[in-house]
Image (cartoon, rainbow, N blue to C red; front, side, top):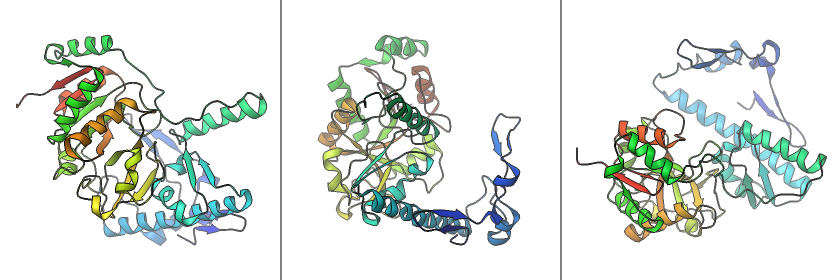
Length: 364
């Protein structure tokens, strides 16, 4: 990997282009008959000679595949920190702001406080191509047009929102309205927390949808982070994901240091921290195999209803953390009430908290 991606002076890096073809043959996109996008290889035969034939999609993960993934991550971190150390040296700033797909590498982000001189970190909630486009527009807005700076973005809740009337109509369309409880915010959070404390899996559909690739407590499935076997339960009943993929802990911001080795807030789930040994049993379903967690810190100001839910769960269990995964089943994250209800009905979710309504499935 170090021969393929090389470090250069002044925080730069270069690729050995003998291993790649994208720069000379272009990028060949296509679509299958089923509508799935395809992407032709961007690498040359020299890469195959070095590492062997590529793994087929869906094939068993071998030790070689794991070793390659580990080596690529390790080399990525070396290059990333090489760039960041140079950036810190030439700016003298202790604050780092990142966007683009690379900034979604939350494992590397969580290590930068030890590996570089930066003490503060910010990533845009939609830190892929849409976040980069936002940055370009913001650049023009300020530096070309001279407009004043707006307020910093501390949350990602900029998507669609639906009123209780719209939620009620959707529940009625699916025959669920008569069995639904309509509750005020405090009662909804208390009732949902009690369901989660029992080990039940709950769809949580609230407020404006998140902007970006992470479910941040608006279009989420929530569960008990320390319930025995919860990771396997979620995968068997709803998510059907690869065994090695972890679930995320959403934690009250002021309690980060009780469960993690770092305390810098992570509102957009962009940082992976080491877990503290004394708290691992409480969050066993979100503690990864290497004792890390890709946490979301939740504060009262930016996510008030989600904060209330986690606080209510802490009152039930003593744990200020809730397991959070995206509200979907091998599909895009649900956006509308009808999509949320469809997902709830066709999976083995136990309950659905949607707007002010709580729906709970019977024993069957």
